[in-house]
Image (cartoon, rainbow, N blue to C red; front, side):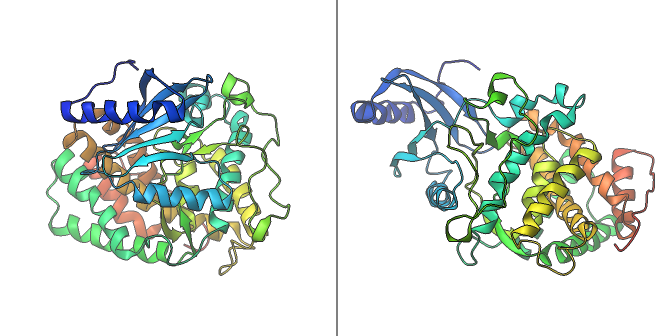
Length: 391
């Protein structure tokens, strides 16, 4: 990544320079060290700047006409209260959309894993994934209704429509009408009904390795694999009944990109973590981590629903149906990012999500019409692999 900041709007560049100069002394910033840190799928950009003491800070550039940072500020507070390692807000110019944050680290969990290494030895990353579970569970324990926007039927359906609107119609050039539209309607009805039946908790909504930061003092940040069992023991008591992750902020995974958090199905974030947008695992590893999450969650009372606390298979089916909603949504989002927003790197990962969709649809009889639709669109031979037991 180039160290040069690129501004499409000269007026915003000037506003940024004045804002930065105005807080340089109070925050002990070396203004000549500003460089790009990362960008995401939205209009937000992130810069890194050094301090006089040799530390670093993160600057968020979020044009207010495109981004509302109020949700970021509010949810950061909720996560801090729950004990998660999230950026602290040092100063925020709400009117201009500039924010100064603490820096959790420069290396994401995705970068530590590296897809080319992961396939060869997934078990080597078990401890890293259990640290992610350590961050997720306190967030879910802290849940309260009427605090975050609801992940309700209207939102679930809006997200599902991204698939026909952008992936099928815009990307594949498929006419979404007639029997195809009817198949989608029936499938979407099934998905919404299944996922809304799950218990409701705080949902990060993009809880995956790309948004988890490995602290610089962690062995993984220096290329060393984490030792077996390095994740915290979640059986210990916590303040107010909430079990916080173990260790200082310098040792725990940092959590980013949480501004779209909602109150919704408990199955969402674990599905997001294990069926990643940019990294694929074999099912054995996905099951291993999901079972370990389930075991910890039920000890904390988070699986007290129907037969989930005694039957992992029942919970697993719910995770798969929730994952299917996310996969359809993300395939549509990636097509939109490419076709509307000029970000082609995202659509390159769409085949991963089509694979996830096919994988789940092949398990359940109710999803056979969706599987046939996908195979027709993708020109893929249909293979049926029914799921055993209750569906």
